[in-house]
Each structure stands twice: as structure tokens, then as C-alpha cells.
Length: 429
Image (cartoon, rainbow, N blue to C red; front, side, top):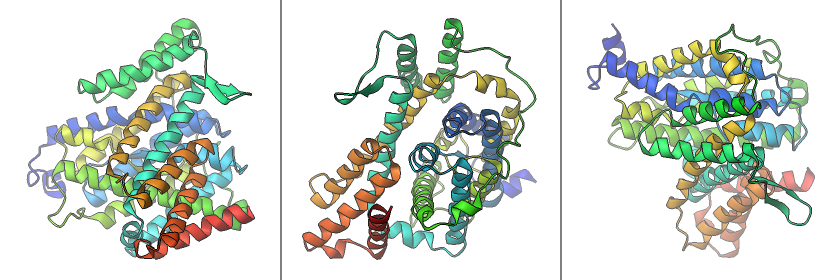
């Protein structure tokens, strides 16, 4: 029955291979169980409740992807999207985390509608490729800044704004060690490199007395502090529109890139370059975001770490389902997540940031209309400490340059719409 439903034999796989691939994918992306609660806790959310919400949202997303789209793609709250939630929506713009969850809910609903009516293709195709690559790399720079700040590798300076932190500090040294351990293990093909690095640094912090060991296994914490805590009243304002649109486009770019990368790696991409059952995959992704917001976590999206499971032989949705079941099992490991210090996850954020910067290889730096907007995004996103402001300035600079150089044919309607929205935001905010 499983073989017939998931087309396991047709795709040249087996039950054992799919199970091993699911485990491999889980090990590669399980760091989100530690990083996501740590980030969202800085927005004032309950750490234990966010841990449970992360497990449930990831499990639901994986199960939906496996059952609806039959693709070996796992989902969880996205890196970059959770940073945008905490540092931009809550800490910078001053919205409550409850309002932030409502914004995530609305963006998920828009994503679902775009997926059902197949508008997504028009939107993605009408955004210039350099801007897509620049946004991905800019978020990487933003994550790197957060990681360096969290680990006190860089600190505030009244003279120069930022400066190098105390390299004699054990916490700083452990954060740096965690970063290098990840790359050393990843280079040797260890799919659990990020998870092992976090555990090693946490163990070292426990020896130093920075972390309090309270066990490994326990009953899951209560979900009540975040469950259905969305504040729709404050979300029905004009000022929240750029936030919702930013969440929507970040998820669109992230999901689209991941689907292409994973299906290509698995040999499932069709001859015309399209992703099989794309609409079903997008519906699964958007439904997971909507449910995740109701549970109490930032946007849930497809994970490029799914390629590790594909490398282990995963070819069907059964891989995603196994990953989802393992996220459910992880519910009982909340004490381990609670004892992880923030600097233990800094290495993981730096690692993800480094991977995201590789998108810059697709930018033609000799072309001013590509180089300048991408450079603006790269510079302004971390220095304004705002993903939304960096994206907005990138689109505005692209539109203005095309206008001034007489190359309007290189712009699209969506570029002008987005540029206009962000100009209105900067003028009237």
C-alpha cells in the first residue's frame, strides 16, 4: 500500500532508504528546535511554548508535504523569517508578538490564495533574478550580524558604533569554536553537524556553569502561552501591510528556491524545468504557516536541508513523513532545548548565513543594474537592522536606476508596485 501510494518503487527507492533519508533530514535541520525558541523568546514569547509550537508546526508541514505533494521536502519555522519576526516586527517596529503572529497568519492566507489561483508563478517570474539573489544574501548578512551580536563577538562602541568583543571571554571562544566545528563536520559529510555543534557547545557551557542541566526527557511544556494568541485588532491597520507583504515575499522566494533545489537534486524535476505537483507543495507550505501562527511560531517554510535526505536516497513524500514523526518525538526533549545558551546557537546562525551568501555567485557584477541594487540590499539590511528596509531600498534603487538609465524594459509591474509601497512606507511611517 505504501509503495503504491508514494510510488516508492517507481522512483527507484525502498522503505528502508526512505526511513533513513527521513532521519538524515531531521538530523540536518533539528537545530531549529534550539534556535527558533531562543530567537522568539527575545520577542517576549514563552520559550517552552515556542518549542512545542516549533515541533508541531514542523511535524504538520512535513506530513502535509508528504501526503499532498509526495515530495521529500521537510518544513519548519524558517531561519531569517524568525529573525525578521523578532528583530523587525517586534523589537524595531514595536508591534506585540501577538500582532506579529497575526501578520504571519495573514501572509500565510495570501500565500494559500496565490497557490490555489496559481498567481505565484507570475509574481516570482516578474521579480528580477538579481533582486531574488540579493534578498537571500542580504538576509544572510542580517543573520550573521545577529549571530555575532548574540555571541558578543561584536559589541556596541560609542566611537565607531560597533567593535570587536572580548576574545578572552569563554562564551565568545565557544561560539567561534561551534562555528568552526560545524564546517569541519559538514566537510566530512556529517548531516548532523549543526546539531552536534550546538550540543558540544552546550555541554561545555554546562561545565563552565553557564547552563543548568535539568534532564533530557520530560513531558512537553504547555502550549497555552502562545496558542491562538493572535491579535487581529492591531493587525487591521495600514502600517502592517508592508510587514505582511515582506513576510509573503520572503516565504515565496525561500520556498520556490528550496523546491527547485531539492527536486533537481532528487532527479524529480520535469523536463521543462518545472517542479512536480508544485501547487500541492505550495498549499502544504502555506497551510503549515497558517497553522504555525495559530500554534505560536513564525513563518513555517520548506528547508533546503532536505537535500541531505535526498543525498541519502529519499525520493518520495515518505521521507518527509518520517521527518515529521521525528519532530513529534522531539516534543519530549524540551529540557535539553531549555538549557542551550544563546551563544551555542550563534555558530548555527553563522553557518546558515554563510550558505545564504552563496547566492551572490548568480549576480553579474559588471552590470550596474544588477550590482547596485544588490549592493544596496547587502549594505542596508544589516546596517539598518531591518530586512524590510533593506528590501525596500533595493527595489527603490532598482526602479530609479532603470528610469534614469532609460532601461525601463528591464522592470516589471510588480517592481514598480513594490517600490511604490516601500516609498509610501518610508514617507508616511
